[in-house]
Image (cartoon, rainbow, N blue to C red; front, side, top):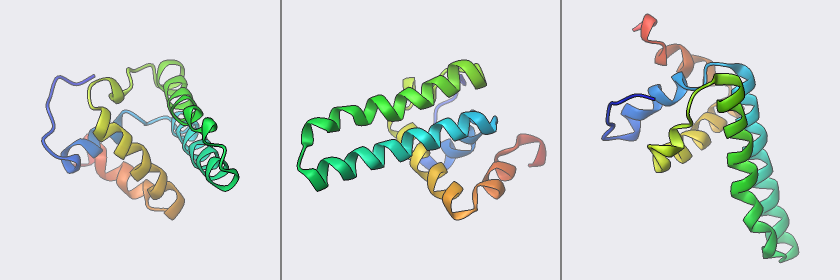
Length: 112
């Protein structure tokens, strides 16, 4: 984990992407994010709000497996909880929209 401090999400996001270089790690994040959305939808549609406690378990569970066992790094959540949560959703949206490859390339320090 970096010792640097980030003042804005724009500064943080390239670092966040560098912590997610392995496609399997990113795929685990997408699985967790998708499950979070499915749990939220199910809870709202069925009015069974007791299921909402599973959202952080599903989201963070998949992500942390990706970090500890695939990337072999410490999740940014521990140091930057808000930026990390936002990063998860921005990365997910970029993946779904097909823009992630360009963001990953732009975050590569060797290409700057």
